[in-house]
Length: 92
Image (tube, rainbow, N blue to C red; front, top):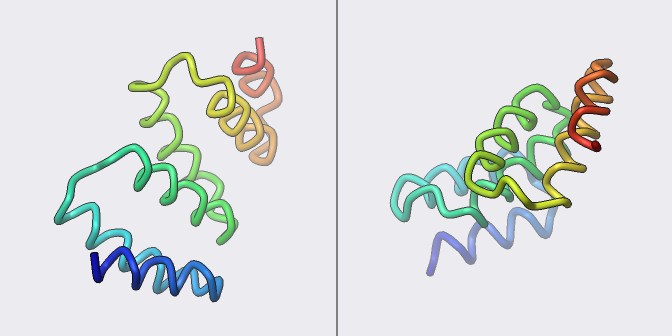
């Protein structure tokens, strides 16, 4: 509970490195819950770590293959990385 509150506080202040650190601890203690993994990807995008964010979302897609919003995020990241052909694959 305390770690989640601390994460939310860092997230609210847009302190991404500290939020990422606390999120890592949450994942370590509570496991790779989909909400935590999604938050991890979102923080990496905000930090403009697009390749790392893509890897997180691809991993999440293995469990949530039919999530249209997730497919759009992945396509967007491929586009940001200049891989338009892969982006189009995820949108089709």
